[in-house]
Image (cartoon, rainbow, N blue to C red; front, top):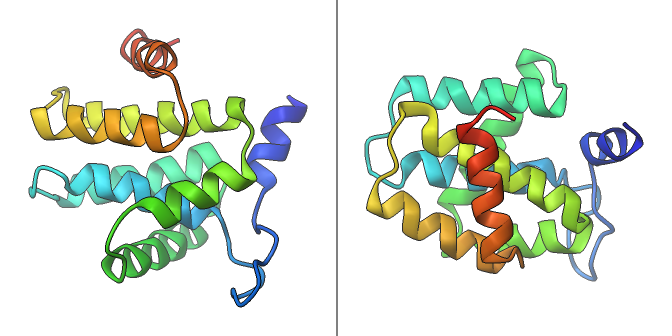
Length: 149
């Protein structure tokens, strides 16, 4: 339980030299959720709502705060050329266990529609490597989501 409190309570990372202080690192996680939801180029309102719901339930946020974080993540994602800045921020601030929780959340986004597309599968494996998660851990997280563990 202490791990969950630490994980969900993380709001900022230590400011790097020249970086804006007090950046909410949950924006980085949300950006990955949004990228996955949009990978098939069919980003529907239900997927957007699912990401907001995920931010509320998994991060314990009020609805308005979850929506604001989602808007911030979308703006950062739109202004980014790749996902490295988001995965790097997560790698610097989250333990391996916490990163596995992020991976499970991304799998939840993938399976929101009950289907795994080739694009989603590719991106999921790419994110696993970028988050320094082993293939075994990636598949265990997937199975956990599929079986509702």
